[in-house]
Amino acid sequence: MNARYSVRKAAGSYWLLDMQQDGKNYIEPIALNESGAKIWELASQGLDISAIAEQLAKQYGIGAEMVKEDILRFLEGLEAVGVSIGDE
Image 1 (cartoon, helix red, strand yellow):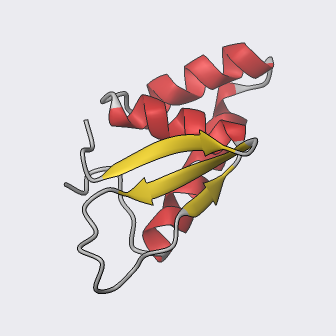
Image 2 (cartoon, rainbow, N blue to C red):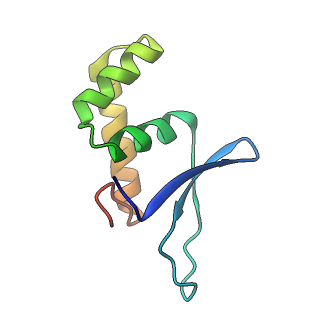
């Protein structure tokens, strides 16, 4: 489980928050859509990309390979702004 970041829902939106900020260099929350919040939740529980893709494919009724590509893009986007599932 990733203790550094937490997803919160506020005002109808999902936000990824850095819970270990010291206040000196404020890091803006990252807006997530519902799918992004679900990906983060499942990955934080230790599921690998294939398992996450299978769950989301069943939930949304689409192919697991397509979902897997979307998950990889989502995680790459987070890494581009310095956020990783494995951050502690």
